[in-house]
Length: 246
Image (cartoon, rainbow, N blue to C red; front, top):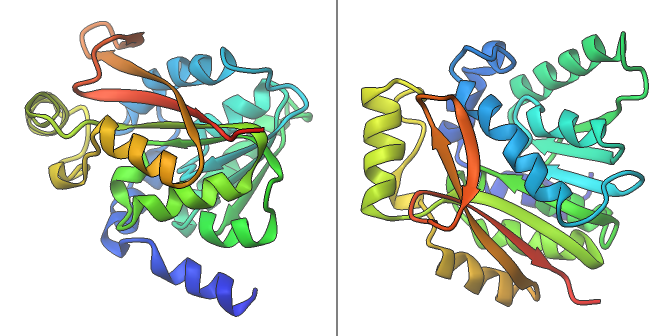
């Protein structure tokens, strides 16, 4: 690893945030466990990506992959997937689950890496047709650094897909008070309201990185039906798609 890569790996993460999610690693793939909401959001996130371009035969990068929920789903669509996280426990769980799945689905492949997106941007510029960065930007000290690295990694015409939380009173009430403290859908302390991201802020970062915003859609989760759907309202969770000009 080069000095630049080492510097990038050390720069843009919060160890407390990594530890928080690493503590959940052993139950990441439990559909009724602490990551249940992610399991139930995953099909909608995948459908959003799939609707904006073919996945089979493409190179896809999953940034902040956690235990691999979306990474495996993307690979299941026929994409050649590289997946990154900075929590060793999560990468280990992701690799173990993939091995289990390969018993019945040997063609399922994901290259899981304990690496930052900034450092892989040094290694693999303009190599990816699509990049997913789901529920990750609100957990790093410098989200713009991540967006810039993603822009460097995309091929011309490639797309970046982001999901995050809007910094609104509704998001505070539902995603923190409701989901973490009342309903117990997420572990307490999962989110910090100050790190939530307004769509206008995300749009500005995308422009600064040379990407063009194509779409912003609300991502609505119903805890009663345990289901998710896209919608117009973006005041809590939202998905965004941006393209790198050809």
